[in-house]
Length: 177
Image 1 (cartoon, rainbow, N blue to C red):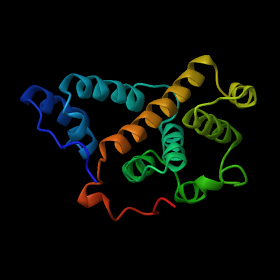
Image 2: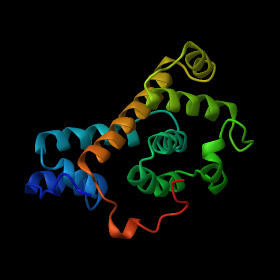
Image 3: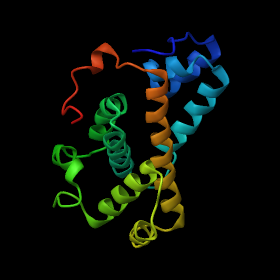
Image 4: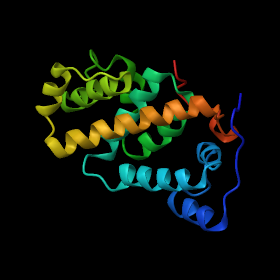
């Protein structure tokens, strides 16, 4: 149930959002109730999606795993298409919840997924950190941790605002289990 109305944007902000993402999704419309924050959010999320060094497919796996952990249907549905476009295989999507025992994931991906879970749950152990540092330098560690943290915030904001999936997104597959 929506808790926050879907706002209209002032023309300059709407133009920028369209430049960045095309038609703004419901998440941005709900955030649009605070124009300054949605503008900053859009620029920051653009940086995380497009101006980073780690592979986009790896970042999308981190986002999807966070969506699973938080049970964020909206985030899961939105990022399935992005993950596929970035080259994440259907087998990885199907086996994401069981990544620890799945042969679909390389050790580097498993280290990133362990970090994603830990950040999303709010506690990164020394073991998770050490595992990540075997595969990522400080720059990439910070980048992946920040992606996980930002998208954990996204899921929490989606929940807080009661953002509903767009009608065209409701038939996504596979469903969030």
